[in-house]
Each structure stands twice: as structure tokens, then as C-alpha cells.
Image (cartoon, rainbow, N blue to C red; front, side):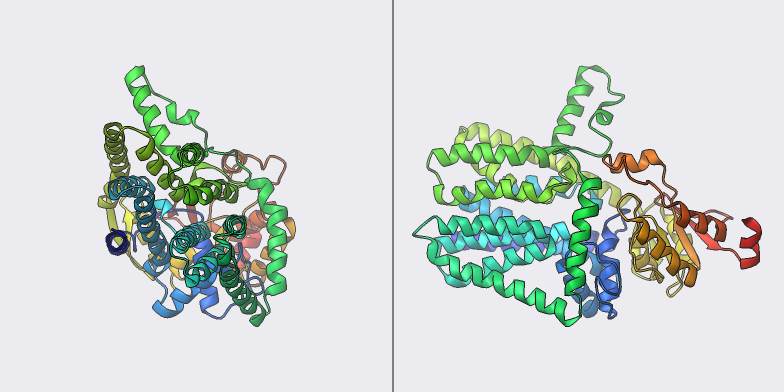
Length: 515
């Protein structure tokens, strides 16, 4: 049975990878965060040093992996999506493997189908980010630990430690998960012999990362960036557990009658699943633990769910919780299969799969409504209403042109292959400081870009996304004044992509006259 489950898990990984490479590899979606990793990784692939030669937003694990892919396979949208596609395919296969181990292949099939359907529903979610990488490494490390606990093989403990350390290099707070696993080994005399190889594997990856930073002279700058994050990220990015941007009330606006309200309530519950499942997993996992089923494994997995939730803070909204929800899906599915009568569990599985299928249909519906657009990053599949502007953007901005995107859409550097004259892949007011604004402005004045992609932000829009930024500056007045004095929107017709308008640099005499 174990070998059969391994083969099915491998088949899931290969099939999902193939499908997403075909349908998602060159699909353009407008998301703020995707370009943060890709633009920085492209600079690294060209020889740039993260944290030293340019601003590196997070810890370097995801940047290192993506830079390696760009070096080996070249820069294209699909090579920028390759890692997240492998992440998602890995999570689906590991969800199946773990659910089958805790319950049965039927439960594993239902849990995997439900997980995959809901996770793939929003195409913008399946885009490059450090949180996909860290969550996948953490899940792999947990599965290796569970497998090692079953057969006692030290190499599995070592690989588990290595995977958990890799997760921490992508998202530092994932070190909490490694600590939970180590504590789980330490408190049991029978499992304690796995502690040394676990620590050995983690130490090897940890030291390899330190050596990599030292070899480029980036170690001190890395620590400085981590200090910057503690000071500037947490305050503005804090969101309550399970919140969504805009609030839940907006999802019910315009509903009429009991039937429509009920339907919306069900859909909102599906949207909120990443917030609902973790506490439910802890509760149901605890009940299953009390009944003595899979006791050894559950004594690890239940605390790990709590640890994974902690890693989502301070921005513990639904979207960020969705990155760590694979394990809660498994625990809830396996616990319900154990605690409920067989017929009830079967009907619940059918309903869950149907709802997940409804959500997943959004992915393919939007895909059908797309048009091909040629770009330096390959043939893009763009939503039809956006395709004309994207095509005009590619006709205007050519590879090698200089372009500054403000405040927050660095993916455009990758798609256009234009040159960013500043050290910042993005420059978000409220998060970045006045000194960083001054530094970027000095770089722009020294090397004025040919083009701007500019979206003026209102205070209301900033607070909608960052509700805790009330006490912070919501715009960089000096920088925006310089841009407005030296650039004008492209006309005949205008070009707007994702709310960002294309602006062209005006000749110096004209710029002086406009002041």
C-alpha cells in the first residue's frame, strides 16, 4: 500500500506540473508581489549582489533559487513561474501522501482534490513569492520526519533538517517549525536518536547560506536588511487573523433574499477556508489524538499547525494563511474521516470536491478569455480587456530602455526587459523611508529613465491595503513632484496596465517650462 501511495503521489506531482506549465507558464496576471523575487533574481543572474548592489526585500533563499533557474534556462515568464509551479505540484503530492498515511487513499483523494481546487481558483495566487517556497520546504521536511519516524533512517532525518532550514532561508519565521520538530524528537527517548542527523542537515544548509552571503560580501548587509524589516515591515503590514482586504462586509453588498444571502455565505466561507481550517485542524486533530489514532504523528502535526499560523504574522490575512494551509487540509480531512460515520464523511467529501471544482472553474474560465501578446519574456496570455494596452506597452518600451515603475509593480521590469535605474524593485510609501525616497530620487536624477509606469495612490487606497498605516506618510511628495515635472502620460491613445499609466520623459526645456 505504501509503494502504491508513493506512485500516486509522484503521478500527481508530474501531472500537475505538466498541466500548469502548459496553461500557467506564460499567463500574465497583474499582482504586485510576483516581480519582487523575479526582478531581483534577474539582477543576481547578471552578477548583481543582493543587499549590496540593490535592495533585497526578504531573506535570500527564494532569490537564490530563482537566479539559478534564470541562469540555467534564461529569462522568460515561464522560467519565472517554474518554481511556484513545482511548489504547488509538490504540495499536492505531499498532501495526498500524508493524508493517505493518516487515513486512506479515498480520504487522500478527496483532500487533495479539494485542496488543489480551492488553491488554484485565483490565478494571481499561483505566482512567485518566498512564502510558496518556504511552505513547500516545510511540508516536505515534515513528511520526511514522519517517514523517518516510521523506519528510523538517519538520512531522512538529515534531509528533513535540510528542508526545514531551506524553508527558514526563504521565510525566517519558518525556523519555528524546525524548533517544534526538534522538540518533538527531544521529548521522546525512542525518537531522540534522530535529533543529531536532523540538526546536522539543518546546520549544513544554514552554513551553506552563510558562506554564500560571505562569498559576495553580503552577510552584513543581509543582517541590516533583516533589521530594516523588523522596523518597517511589521507595523504597516499588521492585519488581523483571517481578514481580507476591503473587509467581509463588501462581499455581501447587493445581496437580496434568503437564498442569495445563503449562497454568498457559503462562497464567503469557502474564501475564508485558510482562516477556518487551522483552528479546526488543531481541534479535530486533538480529538483524534485523544482517541489514540495516529497518536505519534499527531503529537507532531497538531503543534506544527499552530507554528505555521505564527509564521503568517503580522499579516495573517486569508491570502497569507493560504500559503500554509496544506497541513490543515490534511488534518481536518483525516480527522473527519476518523470521527464521522462513513456515509456522512462520504457526502462531506462529495460536497467539498464540488465546491472546489466550482472555484477551480474560475481559473479555466479566465484562461479561455485571454489573448496572446508578444513580449521579451515570451508570448504572454493576457486577459482580453487588458491585451490591447499590454501590446501597446510592449511596442513602446523596448528591451534595454530605462523604466521606473512606481510604486509597486516590479513584474513590468521582467516582462518588458527594461532597465531599472534605481536599486529598488519597488518603492512603497508607508513601508519605505524618506531616506530611501531620497536615495531613489538621486539615482533617477542622475540617470533619468526613458519611461515611467506610474499609478498615483490616494490615501484611501493605501489604507485599504495597509489599514495600520494611518500614522505613516502615504505618498513620496518630492519623488512624485519630480516625476510629474519631467514626464507626461503617453497619448494617442493612453496606455494603462493594471492601473499604471505609461509616461514619457519630456525634453529638458519643456520640463523647465512646466515647473
